[in-house]
Length: 189
Length: 219
Image (cartoon, rainbow over all chains, first blue to last red; front, side, top):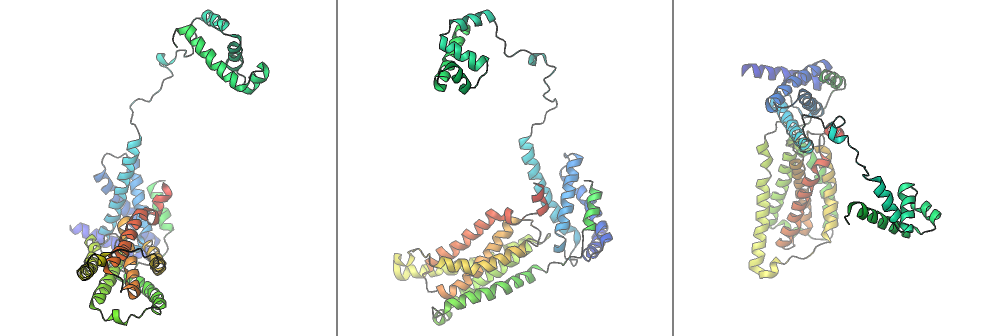
């Protein structure tokens, strides 16, 4: 108790000098503020990582600096500091909760390159002869539309110029042709 | 950045600061800005009405005293709320005069009801009053926000709500000089309604008006 009031008296005197422009005294106050707020943050947020604790300590330091004109040297220093530190810790807790709500903690990073199940060909055609037969069975307009738009990858405008079909007619022909191929290869609609 | 480096930079950027005066002194200083302005607006309006009868009315005096005390105590509490370590129980100080103010207007409503029946409690739109209410409150509001921003924004909502209460109360104090003969229900609805709306609005925008600047810059 006595130690605390001694510390308070020392900090009050240093802060008074700091407010009057003594940079050395102000640096000494800030160093003690950093140590005290580090203790407070550790006590309250024992689960935080060291860098998160330092972030909060620095937030307290910046707030003390911003609010230094509100300190009245006629009053004790520690309640003034505690009010600021509590305020910044409460804000920090809100920030932490917001961040935690949007982040998923994972022990294993979702690395898929070596996984066998991710190294399969997605676009496997299966029976290429059946596909060629299904293409041959399509009506000429649908076959030409699919060849131009899907195989040669022309734009609808270019395919329209080559085939003489309108853009609308090409879209319909491609849609119907794909549906017909799906039916022919899978038997599903 | 390392904490030691931050301390070094903050200490290098620490010229002499002017300590903020006590909340009471700051409330007085705010009144010293707000009152002459309100008086000037009232003076312009008084040329249109004769206040001699209202000044003799004891209810008028009670309402004015309560309204003024609400402004003073709310300003004191608002300025106190930006001082870290300020006793938070003192933030309740404006509740006393505010209750007296509401009670006085409420008593007027009751009297009007007993005297005139339902007609005494009829609420009419009074949009003519809106420009006066805006003009009379503008300088006290600007002075209040500028002064509050010099403090530590520990409880922005509470601070700005109290500041808005002080501004609305001092505006009402001035407006009463040329609106006192209105029915009490009109006072209750328009003047105290204005207080409620202003305070709610202030609480809503508080984080944008007040806030730790370094924290906002980091977001």
